[in-house]
Image: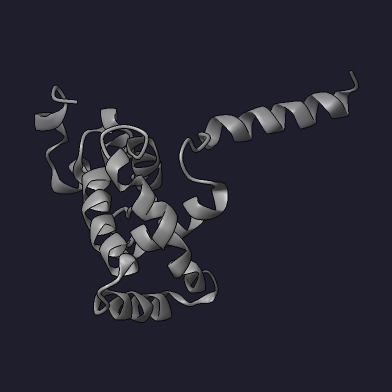
Length: 148
């Protein structure tokens, strides 16, 4: 093994360690979920959905307690594809238009609001609220420290 091979191998291992694998979503689906979750809880002076690892929470829960919602994610997530090429403000307007509909995409968005909140404010033991970001934001990490 050459030094270059070792550097490439080490870099790949570091990348794999930094970003866990998805168990339900494909990488492309995870990107859409992340875009939607960032609209629900955007980062500002405080961390947002991405900082809290919400996409990993939803991903893991869809093969567990949230499994009844798995078909809805699979069927309706493609309706959100246009978001990939939109600015943040255009994504906001797009989601407002989705909310007004009465189809699977509207149901998925409503469910995603709940799931995003759960992943942001819930216990880190369930795969979200990475580094207790929401608890720190709320100033309750000490109180919650023994309950996760």
